[in-house]
Image (cartoon, rainbow, N blue to C red; front, side, top):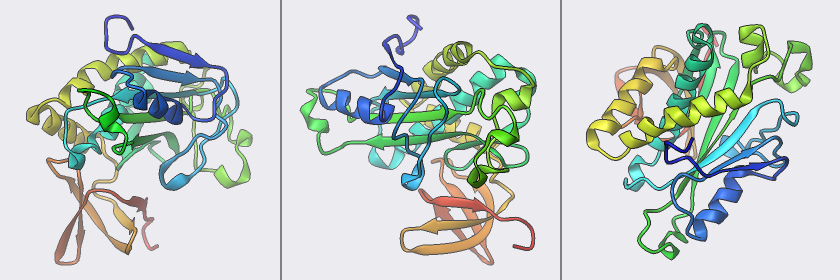
Length: 264
């Protein structure tokens, strides 16, 4: 991807975490655009510290180092940026499959039955950010996309039964990970560019709203100080989730969102 800012792609057969690696590189002053891709992660992580692990070489596991000139209250849009770019990339690889994929706010790609196809995790280290002379604070965004695993539902461990799906399953044939990687990095270039302006950030939030399956769904929002239930009604211009609970509307900037089945 020499024509984009993501030309420095570093590959690993096995690594503990591509996010951890790039955070270390950022502390040493690495510029925006470094990409770490792994065949296998021994300590991959999802939101709330959940583990994320797949058989070696089956899926696309990568992180990108970003240095957007945005405030702390806007850094959640880096997750939105990568999720939208992944959706764009899936559309390049197989236009039929992408019609069955949406974004579960704030960071998962899911197919129509709710099974998880991909997860995104952004991490930053603002404490050491000043060590990099003149560079904006780093944000490392990792994504794991189920490309060729599971091949069938029988491949899943019991705890993931009915909860995960792969592109291979959706398309009905193996998917070229390198083609998906190239499409993802190509799609990231304009998406990351949108982080640099008010209009671009509003466009990211609008695109999230257009592709978000959480809107119109009854949800439970788990926050550090408690939980509440309601109906997700919109994505705000800032990219936050708007939830209506009775006669009250709440805007959620960050939280764990569970889609509730009718009657639950």
